[in-house]
Length: 168
Image 1 (tube, helix red, strand yellow):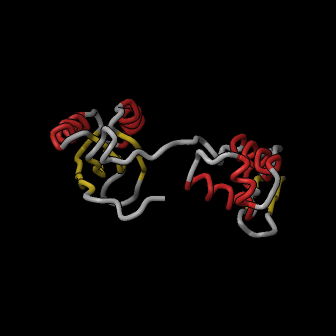
Image 2: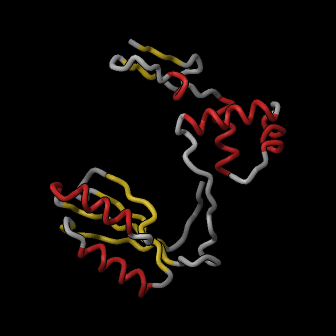
């Protein structure tokens, strides 16, 4: 039996099934949160700049980053491309109602489509929401037609994103 609590009450995880403790994976403190906030704002920040901003040593930052990477909290370092300068200028949210028996194969098909940047499972009248990028309205129309033909799609509804008020 494993019971693990963080004194700062950020995470609580209880694992009665596994012999392996998951405490080290979820045990994040304020320093970890501040580090993640800095990396989310600029994933290209140097370890030295991060250490300076956090008021800790470079070694501490390196150890924290390695632990967060190994535990899966940090899954990737990425860039956000300005849509006015990048290839994809049009974005849409595509709500998808699916045949539950074909969900797994549909998710695989959507994952293979590079225009689908993210796919979320949701509750309500639709089962999935896809975040789709395209270079033009014509290309978006083609993508929506393609998604609609995938086996397992019952119906879709799309909302074209007009602007981004903020992004974190």
